[in-house]
Image (tube, rainbow, N blue to C red; front, side):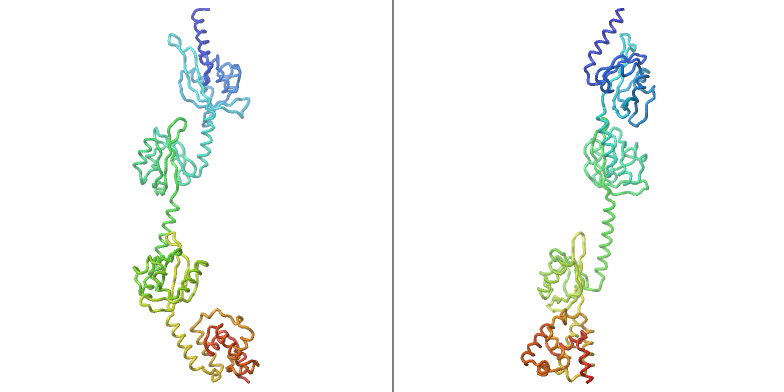
Length: 498
C-alpha cells in the first residue's frame, strides 16, 4: 500500500471518528456517488441502523427513498442531493421530505447542505452531505399553516428582507376580494395595508425595526378601486429562519355602515321630532332627565329649552299630580309604552291644563329614552264639564224628561267623552244594580224603597255606594253613565210604553 493511500485512509478514519458523534447527520460518498459511510445520526434520520440499507449509490438510494420538495414536487434522480454535489453544485439550505419506499406512511423532513473535501492538490476527493432533522420544525410549520389558513381573522405575512407578501389566508381574500396571485409576491408598497393609517409614521418605523405595530385604523384599498375601513396590527414572527411580519385585520366596514344608517335614522327622527305640531318630549329612561323638546311642547308649556334640557321632570315639576307622575313612569318601566293616559300639566305660569299622554321607548345614541307625546284636551274637558253641569241643572228630576231626551243627552255626553272610566257594571252588587236601574227609571229614593221593600235609609246608603263606585255625584250623572253603556234602556222603554 502506497504512502499516499495509507495517508488517505488514515485521514478518512480520523474524519469518521470526528463526525460519528455529531448530532447532525453526515453521509460521505465518492466522486462517482458511491456511498462510503454515514454516521449514526444520518442513519437514524432514515430509520436505519445499517449503512448498507441506504444503498450503494445515488441510484439505489433513490429506489429506496422518495424525495419531495415542500411544495410536493417529486425530485428527479439528477436532482437528488448527492447528484447535485457530484455535479459540482454547492447548496446550504435545501429542505426535502424523505419517504421510504417500504413504508410510504412514514416521512422525515431533512434540511441539507453540501461540502466537497479536496486533497492536498486542491482537487475534489470526497463528497459530503450534512443533514439536520427538520421534521418537528416542518410539523410545527404545517400546524401553523393550517391554523393560519383556517383562521377567520383576515391576515397576511410579509418577509422583512424585501417587504413582500409570502402568505395570505382565506379571511383576507374574502374580506378584500383579492385572489391569492394578486397578493403573494407583491410588496407592501404595491398593496399598502397601512394606507391612511391613523399613525402611519409609527407603523412604518415599527415595520422597519421588525417590532410590534399597535392596532390602528386604516383604509384598505380593494381591487375595484374602493376602500374598506379596517383595524390593522402587526406582529413580528420567524418563518423558515426568516424575519417576517404578520398583519392581522378587523373589518370595521359593517360597523361604519351601521353607524351611518343610525346617524341617518337619528337625523330623520330629529327632523320629524322638531317639525311635528304635536307637543313632544324626550327624557332619559334612567333618571327622567329631559334630553330634548320640540317647539310645540315649548309653545304649550311656555318653557324654554334652557329651562328644560338636562333637568329631571321631577325637578321641573310640570306634572301637576305627583302620584300621576310616579304612575306614568312606573307603567313605562313595566310595559315600555302607554297609550292615552290622562295627565294634568302645569304651565310655566302655573296654569294647569289637561292632556292625554302617549309614550314609547326609543334608543338615542345608545341611551334608552322615553318619547312622550302630549295632546292638549283642556277645551274638550271644559266642554264636557259645561255639558255635565247643564244636564245636572235641568235634570233635577229625571222623571220630567222622556226616555228619548235622556238618551240623546247621554249620547252627546258619550261623543264628547269617548274614554270611559274603567268601572264595570259587574262591579256593582245585585242590589246596587237594582237601585241603579230604578234611578234610571226616574224613581225617587222613597219610590225605590217602596218598590224594593227596603227602608229609606238603606236605599240612601245603596245610592251613595253606587255614586262612589261609578265616580259620579248626582242622579243625572248616574243615568248618563248607564246610558253610555246601553244599560236599562229596555226597562225604561217598557215602562214608557205602559
